[in-house]
Each structure stands twice: as C-alpha cells, then as structure tokens.
Image (cartoon, rainbow, N blue to C red):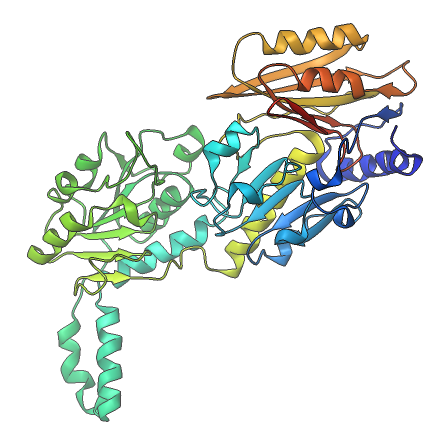
Length: 467
C-alpha cells in the first residue's frame, strides 16, 4: 500500500502535470502498487531515493534552460553515478555503457539528433525507449553550412593565415593590397547548391540558399510531407545522389550516419565523387564517415575543388584544399538550450503520461488524456502475436474494466497503453495484476501511471520480477 503522503502527492502532482502537458486526470480512487521488492542493492543506493520524485541522471554539461523544465516538486536531477536510482538519463556526447543504465531507468534522451553514443539496439532489447531532439540544432548547423560555402569560395582561411604571417614580419600594411590578388574567389549568387538530405537542416539550408540567389537541387528518398512543405518552391528534386550533384557548385550533406549493410557509411564514394564538376565544394556537416576520404583525396589532388567538414579526417587534415572544423555545428548557446529543453519535455511527457515522440527505437504514440476515474498501464513487449490478448485476459481475471487501449509497434518492440476504470473500486490494488502481466512471456516492462512520480515500474529481468 502506498503511504498516505504519497497518495496526497499523487493528487497534487497530477494537478501540476495537467497544467504543463494536459496528460493526467484527477484521481478519484487510491492506488496500491508494489515498490521495492528485494534488497535495495538491486536498485542502487537507498540514500539517493526520494519518494514521490522522478530522478534524472545527467551526463555532460546540460543547459540549465533545459534542466529548468523539470519542476523541483516532482523531479530531482543528479549527475552521473550520484543518481543511483535514476528513472531517466539525459546526455549529450557521453558514450553510454549498458552498466550505467540502472534497472530503474525507464527512458534515455540525447540532447542532439544523433544517437551513435547510445547502445540503441541493446536498449530496445531491454525495453527502454531512446529519444533524440530532431531540429533543435537545425538553425545552428544551417548557419555553419552557409559559412562553409563562404569558406570554400573566398579562401578566407588562407587569407587569415597570410595576414598573421605578414603581421609577424611587420609587413601587413605594406603588402595587403598587393597580396590580396592571391586570394581571389567567387560569389554564391547564381551558383547551384545540391542538398543531399532534406530534413530539418537540409530544408533550412535550401531555403536560405535560395534567398541568397542560388539555384537549389535536392535529393531525399524519405522526404516527409512536413519537410516538403518547408522547401523553396524553386527547388529541383532529383531521383538519385548522382543526378543531384552533377551540375552542383556546392554539395551539402545532411543525412544520418547508419552503420551496416544498406547503411550510409562511405555513401559519398568514388562513383559519386567522380561525378563532381571541377571546382565543386563538398560541405559535410553531417558525419565524417559518410565520405570516402581516399576517393575524395584523389579528386582534390586533381581538381580545383574544396572540402569543408565539421569532423576530423586522418587523411585530409593537412590537405591544401580541405578546411576541417572541430565539430562546431551545434555549438551555440541557443542550440544547446533548445536541444536540452526538447529532451527534457520529451522525457516528462513519457514519464508523466506515457506519450512517445522523437524516439529512435520505439513507435510514435500520441495519447489522449486519461479518462476521469482511471489509471494507465503502459506495457512494453516483444513484437509478437497474442501479447495484447494475454494482457487483456489478465485484466479480465482481476475484475478491472478497460476503458481504452492503444497498441503500436516498431521493429521488434511493441508498446501497449491501457486505461483502466477505477470508479467503484475504492483502493485499487494493482500489485497482483501488474506482476502477472509483467511476467508474461514476451513482456519486457510495465508501468502504472497514476500520479505518483517514481513508482509503479516493474520489469521481467531474466525471469525475475523486479519492481
């Protein structure tokens, strides 16, 4: 039985959450869930457990603007291993290891678009959704892409280095007008930009390039309706990378890096690079691994082209036609604030209501408000036939009536959300039915969402019931 203090917290925290996300309903019945079976060493350190709160574990320096999205009445934020009983993890570039993911963790969010530093496949097996923040850093990266076009056109870096050398010799004023002819360039207006990948960053780049007077071509086999509506009307969409880049003066890569067969590793290879026109500038502000460095070096050695990248390259780092930046794309205060805020909001929505958006491994699930006099059970299962029927059968045996249910799947995982009527039940005892559901073959975890932060979570850990 949940103590009276936590029952009170259920009612008050429910009202606070409704104001923020409109995802919780008022509670007309008390709820009894099991919490903390077994020794506390299974959970971590009992001294870090604060009843009635969600605990957020952070890695890296997270923007204070983002952390401020977690109300202190319901959340406590701790760094690294200080959060021994974390319910969610928030991180930026930290390379997350499985042993850092406590059994109590319900979700992981990265403040950024890429999730290469998170073992996503393993988290899927464990039933843990991984979230990212698509579009949060789009403006910052787009602005650097535009700067990259100028860096590839006007020999700005060479000019800066030359002025530094003249300054050391005391010859800057004497030589500046004479030497400027060494650094002639070209303008962007009237040139053609090929945008490979038309997501948030690609679409924004295409729009601004058109505003600069450029001709724009684009390629994206997975172009969404949402992003298509953001494209400039004059863009010429192509049916392949090769056809997109053939006439381009500038080529901007804006696609994710995907390992394995059918992935994007080295997608800009010899066959594509051989199709570049002489003098083409390749702009890589997506991922270094997208480009075949050997093939690009051969091209740069024999053509008047440029490579501007936001990533290190062991082969091209000192090439006279390459400009490499130290991964500055999202390194603005505005982008860090936006990414952290989006990640925090995503975590809150999931913990407080079960809603899933911006997940890289779980199905998007937009949930209606819980009906009045109801509690919500969210169940993560393997994606196989019959799971929802077994869950419904467990509710029927317990005498609880299902008001509404949603089932979504993605790959090997399924997400089931069931709202249960609590009217006329007095104290609703969920202990037995939650254990029965959680220990069904194929169930990975279950969570009772009823207004008390940090409670109601159970997992099937190798056949053992963890709650």
